Length: 228
Image (cartoon, rainbow, N blue to C red):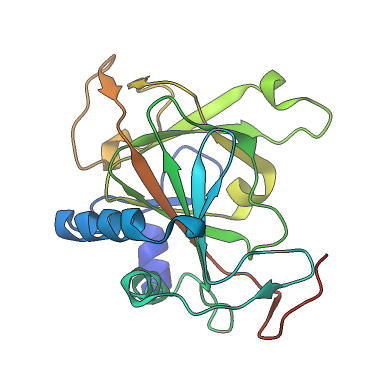
């Protein structure tokens, strides 16, 4: 069995539309600490401040006209290479971009999809805190707040989540703006795969979370593009 097929088969989340893979403890505690240290010591201009969170782009800034490719620093390259070694991306479409989001307790993100700027596989490493990722069936005639929650996935610290296929194309995902998350075995579909055993109704306190979203941007250029 190929590495790709083994990763997909052994880590597939059941009872949800295709397809998600969840790998707990994908990185070590030491690696998590190193990532956090690097993220928090980059020059301030590297941060982009949004209304409810801030982020860093590494590898370039995706744009409909194309991304000007930049070298990913060595402290991030290790994790990009590790994901590449799983062979979940096609050989000619390796991951070339890392988006780092910082979420403070009570910060989240509205229902969204990753969109056409990216190859339709998204991989996310969580550091510092868990997240509860909520999924909604895409409906282009409804406002995001009108959508019905279909299911959730619990992303533990140091875990890796892989989304592709129907989940990437036909579903939106979101993180609620709350300081705590409550375990519901009927809604959270990957509890049996988690590193820790959780009890029904258990309340999880959030702390500051860093998400490393590693993807492939197909349209790139090494030349400066006229974007304005």
